[in-house]
Image (cartoon, rainbow, N blue to C red; front, top):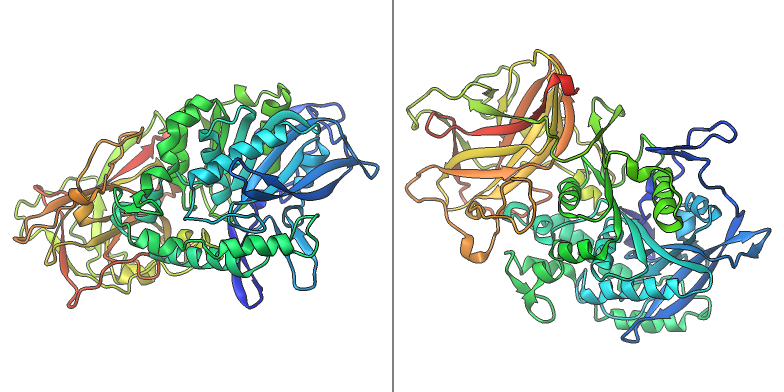
Length: 623
């Protein structure tokens, strides 16, 4: 999660390392002597045997001589550092392990997330390191997720394990970038890395930077700009042996060679594009998905966390379906900076007690999946499962119809129903749409939130719907649970040889209020389907190699676009409606080429070209 504060008149991202939801939800009090270990609740299995901590900061040398800055938080008892060997849990911090304010004060990880002290009191050492080429660490960053950075995690793990104050067991924690580095670290197979807890972390770089082949421009642009400013212009806190900051300043002079991720990604629009310092296949070499087999061979236990309104819900579930190591996953209703509903620190403590201390608290005897079904704002309905997708799922097609539905002020106000289209005249059974390049999901959405803009929980979709094609069902007779991966099948043609298609799933209340649920996108020229190189649970996979591109037919022949939306779990209330909205742009987020005049597309809804969305419906008895 990225947050922003102003320092030296620059907007700078500051990772709160999850905010971990730590401390926001206190554990349920147990009776004296009672032992409790269940999702979000933990007591009686381990005790807070220490009463404080001390921060020690130093450089640790990597295999190539690069010095990495580390803040080491060790437990104390009665004001004295404890030398008992305990597990170490660390994070590779992308946004400075410790901030230096203009008045000389230092803001540490424990200042950002004071609840981490609870882990320390339970007998853990917490460590925050600056990544290579960032903060007070030396080195140059040639883009993100390099193998050098991954091997830094290996060297750090083994250095921690060799210290007399470590019991030889090491774990990792953190969110977003700090979660991705955990998977990359596991791929290097450090002997003493036993367990990780990555939150809201990427699986495949290309699918994030170019979902469906459409450039996620605003995120990459702003994130690249802000991290580059952080590395080059904002001094981090120096280590203890460098009080004047001379070494830190020397490290920052090396940061002058850091690469801006934006031009690198912008110039690599295909999955097989060449980029980086060696002009290699950057989306292969730096994508965590490339290293699934190595992670499985590592044996490192993984507790994944995802959020339905986060950037990476699909990624979290794809990780779960591809790893064979001991693992658990929780899917929350959160955005990237979301919190609520359970004590996340208790889950960290349960996880690391089991894997780093050998405390048999039963966490691995529970169902591996915990997921939230969104039943209303702030309403948490936690459920468990043994596999994903849920085996009781009924994949149900809802077909685009002519309408009017009488529920939307939109370009067409189409209908949506379980009935297959009956019209045989394809030339009449379509909706024409002149692309409106101003359509947008605005600011504060899931994409903005991932780079530090406050999540606004999506305003009413009416403004977007008005400029779009909409297809809305009749009011539902009963509550309808949708849990899984919606897949859309659009039959389209266009006056242009390409185009971007954005599809939104919405829930419409009787008042007419339309609420965003999830979304997906595809550039038409990327529509070719291939077998995925990993377990993608039967979802459509677009390889998006340069050679795979196919223009839209110039004679107007309809073609089928098949793509999945981000997974979700939501109950559509009885009396509410299901709506599918289709646009040709998301102006403030994704880069869609603008043609003058804008092209006209046709979305077909005939018997021969039955556009529809397949929704993963959970039957009532599973509710």
